[in-house]
Amino acid sequence: MTIIVADDSQQPIPIKKDHVKYYTMSFRDGSYPGINLALSQVETKYVLYADDDYVFTNETRLELMLEKLENPHANIDIVVPNVIGLPNMSALLKFGFHEHGICGLGVRGKVSRDYLMVPQYPQCKYGDFFENVLLAKTVIYRKIGYYPPIKPCTHVEFWTNAIGKARIVLCDDVRILHKHGFNRVYNKFRVETLNIEKKRDPSPLFENDLCYSHNYDFPMSKEDVMH
Image (cartoon, rainbow, N blue to C red; front, top):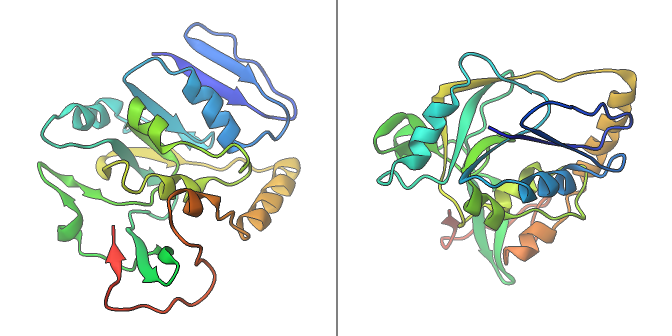
């Protein structure tokens, strides 16, 4: 398989190996531009994406993820593995009606496992909000899209974009390890990113015809809707 790397490091170290496409970007160009660049070079039916702090192990069995995407009866578009080293994200996002339209209300509370279970795959469950590692149908992944102006933090925005565009499952039979690298330079930029993340850019909500309601109490009604 071909591995595509988009690197916006301060001191990039090019990878010169067979089946590796390596692209150097300007320093701190950001996640969205980097993923857009890499995704533009994908020529296969399926694509695997992972942030740079995931570690593949013997339990990271891509063939099991691929099997679910290729099952014509399952109708699955994106498969996420069980991430070891981080809290298990598998929530449904919550929405409600407002005078200005439908608003995103963040992550919904606990939902019954039976409600989320995937037919044919009891080890998998549906959800809207996961970690940043996935195997997807390339055409669907491109439809979800990214916003190049949003550089440092792309987590909530991506999964918000995916609403209504993809059927997403997390499967426990594939596991991947998450391991942050830490040093003084990295920590400095990490803190800056987390501070920016607190002031979320509402453009993904607007692009999906959702009003902006994060960070304040929202008046709920009987007409609440859930994806």
